[in-house]
Amino acid sequence: MTDRELKNLWFEYFESKGFKKIPGYSIIPESDTGVLFTTAGMHPLVPYLLGEKHPAGNKIIDLQRCLRTKDIDEVGDNRHLTCFEMLGCWTLGECDKKAMIKLSYDFMTQKLKLPKSKIAVSVFAGDENAPRDEEAASAWRECGIDKVFYLPKENNWWSISGGEGPCGPDTEMFLVGDQPDCGKDCSPACDCGKYVEFWNDVFMQYVVKKEGEKPVVLDKPNIDTGMGLERTLMVINGYESVYEIGCLKRAIELVKSQSKVQDERACRIIVDHIRAATFVLGDEKGVTPSNVGQGYILRRLIRRSVNYARKLQLDVKIFDQLVDLFTDEYGEDYPDIAQKREFVKEELFKEIQKFSKAIEGGYKEFEKVISGIERHKIFAEKTGEKVENVISGKAAFRLYDTFGFPLEFTKEMATERGYSVDEQGFEAEFKHHQELSRTATAGTFKGGLADQSEATVKYHTACHLLLAGLRKLDPTVSQKGSNLTPERLRFDFSFPRKLEKSELEFVENFVNEAIAKDLKVDCKQVSLEQAKAEGAVGAFENKYGETVKVYTIGEVSKEICGGPHVKSTGELGRFRIIKEESSSAGVRRIKAVLE
Image (tube, rainbow, N blue to C red; front, top):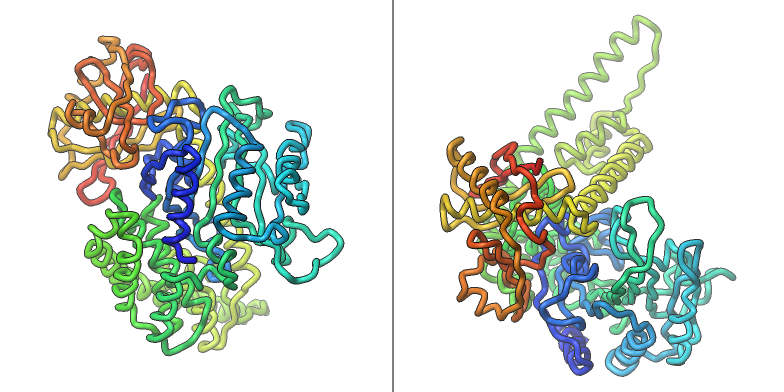
């Protein structure tokens, strides 16, 4: 089965069951969703999972491009990718487990043609906060599935990073391999490879209103089901890895054909990372490489690709061919990628050039490290201290993190000079860095709309007023992104230069005047065409589908938006701009607070 055939099966099946297809969202979300990238189909839908009414109704499906880098060091094995596609299906405001499990079972056995003897499932075993999910287990047994495993929270409970927001038990679906059990406790929870997960149904029956608190029952529960496209194709086609799927396989073969050194994992990493870079750069809101946030992740992906190309003695000009391959493959589902083909190539070239300079800096840094050790040895001879020819883990990690030198590269250079590298020290530094990254990621998510906090909702409304004020200065201004926390807003917008002090004062006064008037915030659902005809601003309108929500604030603002918002502007308090700065080429950033 091809990826196109699977996509068609998915939409045909669920549309026949009353679900409505909606467009997928950008891979670079409005930061209101709280993550640097769209990591799952549900992230852009959080307001609807918490009770907002979706314009398309309460039964929806989509195809979503996603990006996760949490497992970046596992990329290159048989099943990990940074960039992937997710088929999603939701019931909003209701949680009929039996009905969804029956739909899942029928799709697996009737459409994917999987024998039920090869299907295993896991359900939540229960804990002090929520009961054992016998309802889900019973539904599976009624379908004829006898391999039902009860697993603890770490395996079968879903929650948003950071802890706040909708959550609940889930049931996961696995294809069972032919190999014998790895032991008496062999189950989907172990890593022996016998059970390969490819789908799950999340029952969002609870919500954590504040981090650290116990979950409480959600007034309007939901079901979120997500099927990873690549993993599912691997399972149903009997492939050994996700890299055997059509497009990825062709890309691997292309890289191998031009590599002077053969290394399967290196080939896979290059293909995965360049595909991810194509998705990010080619997105309608594509960012460019930088040292912060999304730009940093993109830079890391590109530079890792260059390093592995060097390992394969592969000319990086092949990246253009990979971009063409991916653009041709995904342009049908994501037209923005097709439209930005040349932009993607140009930005890749620029970053490779910058990295070449960084590599030169890394060589100089390496020489400084060696010189420092040699000087230490001269001094140590006078004191009798023994100094070994070992590059510290900290120094090796700096070469990796700052200059892009992989550990293997540093070890090779060290060996040539008669040195070794403290690999354990490097791993310790690396793990520390990973932990900091995970903490930062969780913190980023907590800054989103997932918590639906009163303060964050106020800042969301303030963003609408801010955009209206900026468009008074220049009607061509458009929103490029935002990040909201309960303490402040950060708003990115298109503008060719730094704003003058008088212009910032004008915008600030405009917002405060709108607040002082205590304007009512109205919401209505209309067709996308009607919203455009009425002059509604829609920075990211293609994600909303045929029917959209339009929020109107007096005569000041009219925007297509998913919400939520305050009832009137008088709730906001006083608006104050605290900083205006560059975000990227042609994009400015304003940070502001409500007092």
